[in-house]
Length: 180
Image (cartoon, rainbow, N blue to C red; front, top):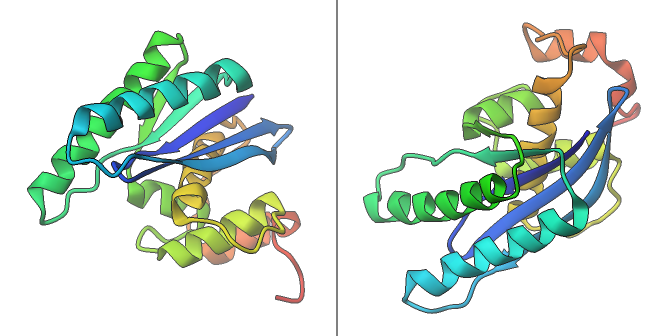
């Protein structure tokens, strides 16, 4: 199963594409869409849609996973993220790809084992889970890959929810690198 994960934003929109087969996750592509520095929202939204549409047509994902809006103190920011989410959803729907949404807390819990994990912790675990050697990676990229990995874990019929991080490690020694 090929999964496109998206971390929507109005300055950077992250994307991560993984293949999930036989309980193994492999990164296919990851990056971010750097949006123009204009005050007008419409050109940014069009660019998000167009770039996601190109990625979908090129990589042909089977599933689309999107991070839900984070409700912070700034209503304007939440509204703008909502716009980015909307055009992301539209790209999936217009390409007939099943989609699922996950909250930031759900993604962090799935990948790190802690729903309150930092962006650094998420990035560290994504690099370990996917065996990535890349030193520099934007958080938008690693967050999008985390959304895709979260979806893979949730879709897997063999995925059993661990009660805590210690139990997960005991049940999945192959996912943990020794000597760290």
